[in-house]
Length: 286
Image 1 (cartoon, rainbow, N blue to C red):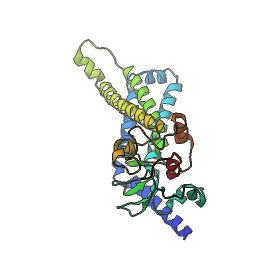
Image 2: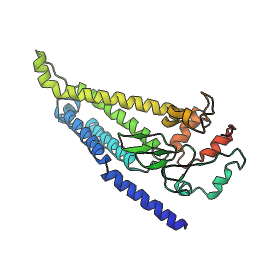
Image 3: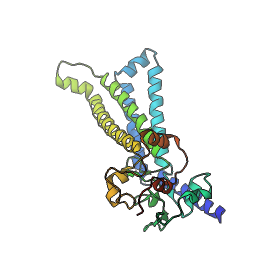
Image 4: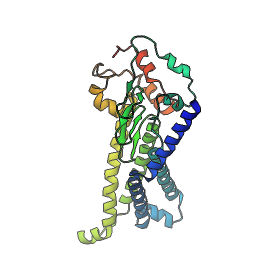
C-alpha cells in the first residue's frame, strides 16, 4: 500500500510538471525569457558601458552580467516548475517530509485542544494547518502563500525560499541593467534627434524601472512577512482563517522572533508540523 501510494504521488508530480511546462503557463514563461534576453541584447548592442568594456577587452563585468541573467532565468524556471508543496493524498505529509518518521505526528499534543484537520471541499483531502486549496492549480498547497501569475505556479512551503532568492537575484539584475541602460544615453542638438537616437534605450529604461520597482516591493513585502513567520494569505485573510480569526490583531501563533523566523525559513529544509508549533505556543483551542 505504501509503495502504491508513493508511486501514485510520483506520477502525479510528473504529470503536474508536464502540465506546468506545456500548459497555460508556457506563454507566460516564454514571454518572460524573451523579454529578459531582448533587454540583455539591447544593452550590448547600444553604446552602453557593457558594450564599451566588451570592445576594450574588459570582459569581467559583461561576463558576470550575462551569468547573473542566466542564473535569474534558471531560478525563474526552478520556482515556476517545482512542486510548491501539493497535498496529494491524506498520507502525503509523511512522503513530503522526506525522512520524518511517523512518530512525528504523535508529537502533536493528543488532548481535546487538538485542532481538527479540515477536509478540502474541492480535492476531498485533509488539509494540514496553513494549507489552502488553489483554484488555479487545483491542489491544496502546504503553507500556502499565494498563486503567482508571473511564474504560473503557487508559492508554498517547498518553493517559497527559492521564490525570495529569485526576487533578490532578479532585482540585482534589473538594477544593474538599469544602470547600464542609463549609461548608454547620448546627447543630441534637438529633442527629435535625441529621441531618434535614444528611443529604444528610453523604452528599455522605462520597462526595467517599472519591473525594478515591482520586484523591490515584492521582495520587501515577502521579507517582512517572513520575518513575522506569516504568509500573504494569512496576512490578508486572517479574519477568515479558522486558526487565526480568534487570535488578537497583533498575535501570531507561529512567530518565534525575527531571527528564528528568518533562520527557519532559509535554513530549515525539513517539513514543519505547524500544529505542533501552534499548540506549543499555548493558544486557545478553535
